[in-house]
Length: 171
Ligand code: DQA
Image (cartoon, rainbow, N blue to C red; front, side, top):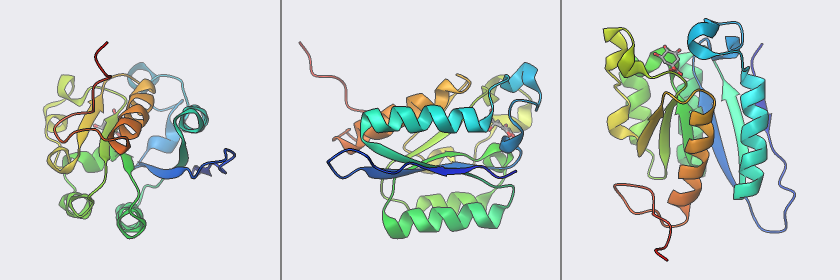
């Protein structure tokens, strides 16, 4: 079953919407190879992202699709609406030049996330064709990868310098 959730802004100030896009097979989290991906479901990740997003002033719109064209359409939407993107492209990571070309259009934060650490897995996972057009990549922290990505987006929107998220002010 596809997972799509969006938060309704409840605060007084305007909230920036962040698209949290998920590629093929990620709706199966919880039952899919739990020894690699754990037991947390995509709905659990959506709820956690929603709560953290609210704390960070971000309205989280989490979506999943098995369809490359639909995923690319959502990236086009991010371009048109100028929205930051967190994306777990799943297997598309390793071969979708079309997805890479779409992401290359974006001028705001684009964070590539993975639950597992592809660099520690099969050799075909060692190549990401999207990393070079992402602001940065967070991989290997399970569901926490998404939380770290949300924090990175919040930092980037608050003036994070190119080349890395802004560091906290020195004390
Ligand atoms: C993944 C890693 C990919 O190699 C794999 O195809 C996935 C999930 C991850 O989140 O660890 O489907 O993106």
